[in-house]
Image (cartoon, rainbow, N blue to C red; front, side):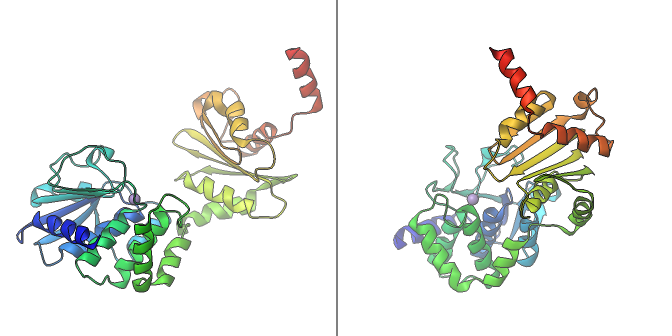
Length: 338
Ligand SMILES: [Mn+2]
């Protein structure tokens, strides 16, 4: 095993010369960020410079916390002058995974997603692994590099995230990497990153939700009005499910000419997904699972039925949709079918 890792490391190193400026391109999530940090560390003092560029917008609060708490130097791909770089690496993705990856020749691709049959001078694709961070930990160990607390914390958090605390697909190597990182990571820092799921600019939406919610029987209804980010509906719907007696949480908001409706329930009652597609499918996309569902209804198509900007009316209209059908309706339905 260890010879294989050493061989991999040496073959990886062979791709780079001391005068190279290297660009690592990622679709930033915890695993990609931590793995890129590790690759940068591997190449430290072996190349002229290493830049890590991300193709996506980092908006998840935990990812933002990871970048700032671990001081990860990240730059958006749009701000990168590709001509400055000689060698390119993709980590935790493959070039054809995303159109935003620059269409250039990649020197190295290191990933744990299913193999998409790309070619590159250096390829290390191990789909059986739970995280690319586990692979990168093997490289560090093969290079006899003791990871800094921040790097170890990043890799540690990446494995936790990608394996969902080992509830998802993982191999023994993930476990071994995790055990190794545990000795070097700052667990408090990892916990802080894990804990962060809110951004301070969400506070106004929470205020509105707490002040303006309607509790009807055991259903909570909230309308947030215009929202900057649809994630806030999910956060607030989940938040209200934490209260006793609340068995349904229905949160709406307006974004991008759509009425977003996020629903949570305790799973023991009516199927939220089918209810949503029943009631809102005709206005856009709607559906989900038994206890988690979502609709994105076109405001244009809703216009003949409801003015979504009239909050009181909107809430009333929504409450009607989630009412138990009266026995009368059930009866007439039955007659209709018979
Ligand atoms: Mn990954």
